Length: 121
Image (tube, one colour):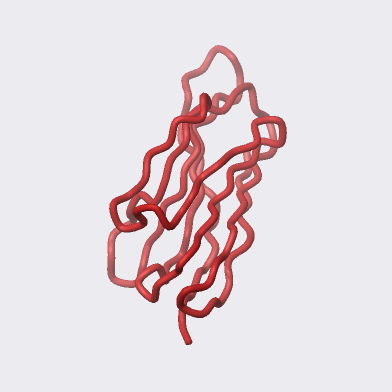
């Protein structure tokens, strides 16, 4: 059983910072790409940032250079450092990881339960 557990969300004022974490646990053979997505009320889920197993990164246009994704492969953890937060960053943030549970099966996507980020004064 594979689990992804996010933490670090909360209420922050505009211009503030938050750091999200997502820990992968359970039966894991290997993890490929890991990423963060978000969904605001009434909107579709969108890519925030993704990082490959080799450390290459890609960001959604809306976060520009304000957010930084990183990972600690030894801890099966991915992070999202969010700076200069804006009200439009308010959303539920989801962690996703491409995981191969055992060697003989393909990678598949696993999602966390989400963590709420609210940016408001």
